[in-house]
Amino acid sequence: MANATDAGGITFDRVGDYAAARLTQKLSECPDCGGTGLMRTTTHQNGRDYEVVTACPRARLQKRATLYNQAHLPAVQSLATFETYKPSNAEQHRALQVVKEFAFRWPTQRGFVLSGPVGTGKTHLLSATLKHVAIELGVNVSYVEISLLYSQIRRGFQDGKSGGEIIGPLSQVDVLAIDELGKGRGSQFELETLDELIARRYNAGKVTLFATNYSLKPPEERAQRGYFGTETVLESAKDSKLLCDRVGDRIYSRLCEMCEFVEFPAATPDMRRSPQLAGRKRP
Image (cartoon, rainbow, N blue to C red; front, side, top):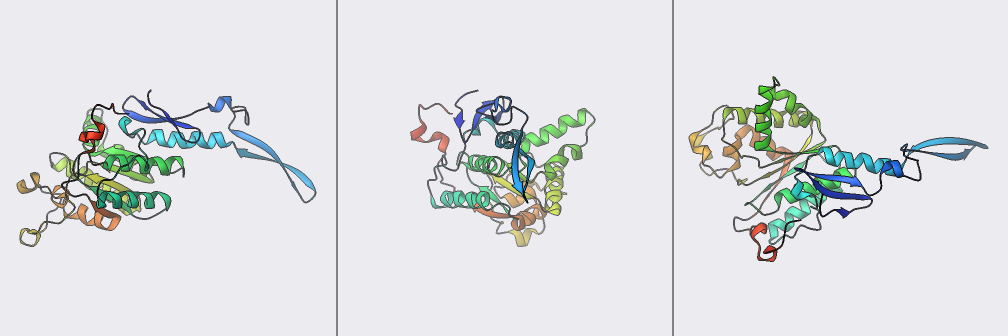
């Protein structure tokens, strides 16, 4: 564990591959509940005293830390917050405003899609959003990098699991962040997996957040080329820089309904290569 930062009784660390939250003081050491997670108080009503059992604030905090840990956010994003994101252009400022409005106005019916070059802070904003709604609001959240999900499902096949068994929990979580949307080989398996996951969340009215390196703009030649579904991968789409080509029209159409789009300019600088970070170790 390293570079922990305190946030209202919770510290955030890197533990293995994932970001992790823990209480600054263990629940078992709580002087208010004696480690039970429950507090007994007395209330007076109608001339009589009643004993009331309520959850200890530390127990509620522990529950929210558990929600954060179950999200499996990348370890490198353990310190990601809205305050530590440093936009450099108007669209990055807009992105920060969009994600903050989503977090502070939860519950909402629409998510967002962040598009831009590598190193422009898209995963940072996804992580900061999930951290806020899990820790501050107690929302059940999850994060998945799409190519790692494909690999997880393939490994599951070897253990006799179906793709649906792995996708199932991701279909039901209140807020799911899907990173690197459009990444992959564009195989039938990948497109069908993505289509099933998004369709299940779309049909259930679940909120989904996305980040991608591919442009959100529809292709100018769309009218001539016709409909591109997820059943067939066109050779031309494999090298396309357009998200609608990478995921197909059905998924793209659902994204338009499910999410607000924010696209960073192609010239947005890579924060990892910024001169300000030169010689500085990553947190």
